[in-house]
Length: 557
Image (cartoon, rainbow, N blue to C red):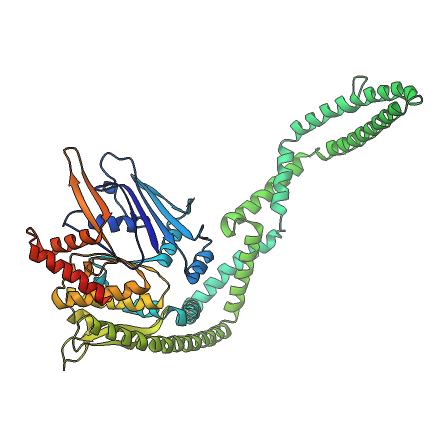
């Protein structure tokens, strides 16, 4: 669950720190107090987009930090799969926002945005103010079904996607292979030219690297020869050479070695040094001879390198890539020379790939429909609990005209809100408030299926009131029994259900305006409910109504 939120220098927030609790956490406050900024900062920490004006005026940066306590073993396993390991049972996500760039960290280690979002999807689910509008787009209905059925269809879905890619690749190859005789002859001539050019070069793996080293030695042979000659002179030629000096030292130490053991040891070491120097001089002499090149040898190496580099520009960056390219061209030549057989083989391969895709798509569709039936029933029950009377919710499947990477299913949510009326597409029936409740029902069902422990609802009460608001509040309380819920609301019915109630306040001084958040005591919570109920004037009657509402909420829970 989300244990702590720390925000600094964002919009109207100077610096706040909030400790959330288990169960239903409710956030209320006056319009314009900054409620959405609080939860907006959570979205920013999870990788949401931002503009530089979100940083508080006069500040150089903004900062958000979320501390999650991870106790669910399946969550822990998913995090480990991403190489994220809770430290003392906690995962800390932070993001530092600066003008034009940001830095995200998990447990203090800088991470890419992609990883941050993957980790976020494991820990928390945010339902924004307008997310229910996504139900208006039919393509999202399949995503909801697949998210609900993930555990049961994920492997089959991946196999279907792989079968689809194989099928599309085969169809593409078949389309490209379809050519008339003139095209085939032209293509064949071009392929043979390329293959012959590479074959005539008689390339050998590693040849280019050896040639480059040799060519470098050739072009610098004079510098190398001068250096070798000078080294040879210092070590083995003339009275001032190292070899002559060693010989003198050996003769000088010989007599002393006959009288003292330590002197004998040093004499032996000196003889060994002389032997090593002689070996070195022989190798230096041999190396000097190998550095002698003729102009013809230099020209030949240069020509060969030019030939190899020319082939690299056309066919690959390395000799191995060039040879592999030649092999592919030869395979194409073989196919074109036996074109009819190749086309026949390709058609059979496409038929086989399509048959496999058809089987995988059918299998995926069957599993989807099984899980969709469970989802359909659960959403229907959830809608009844949210004060939809005589509602009928169905998930319709139709087969697409062609295969897709997700199979052959076209999924659409259908609903009837009035008795005796047939179900119609959700987009044609539901209002904004109804969509909000439908999304709440879906979120409730999804929460029971997945491992996400923290759910955030930003103004789920849009477009509802009265008895419906009471039903929504009861549903939120039910979700709060199994999950941590953080909810911004304007409705007293929902706020009354709070396990922990926070108020968001905006204070203005001569120099600045700030947004703060603080937890409320039981008495303060009742007063806040009275403010929501009574508006500008809070009477004793309103206070009593708030107390009664709070008491009834406790009994309901």
